[in-house]
Length: 154
Image (cartoon, rainbow, N blue to C red; front, side, top):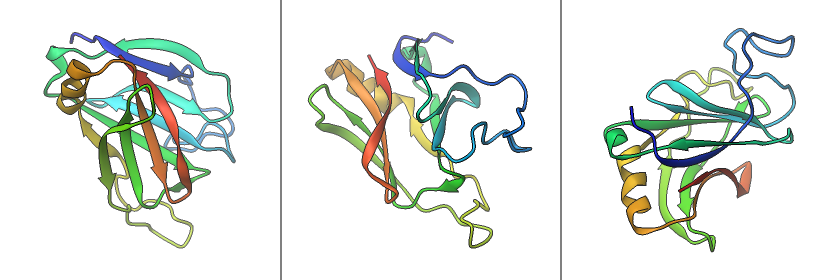
């Protein structure tokens, strides 16, 4: 799989479960937002907000044209509402936006009853990358209206 052009701000993935990590591996640090980005089911990035960032370059190229990125964002143990992922240029202008329905929940604690991943076709990112440089992948939700940059692209 050829990878070109995706720069990810990454925290090393925890190899085993720590004392704060749930049985499903979903939360390594309690009481903080976290997110994970997968490419075709392979974990590329796991980041806990507020922890030091490690810059890691991952490349997306034409060979990834049929692949999907899936983003999971966790708000202190809860799934966000009114979620969206955007690609922005260097000036912060939105180049593309994907909106996602609210995930069904099991109980009043907002624990997802279903897959709450946000799937983005890599082909759509590659199309933008052909026209723009210096792009970022961003997340926003009702709980985070100002949004958060997840990774740089390009």
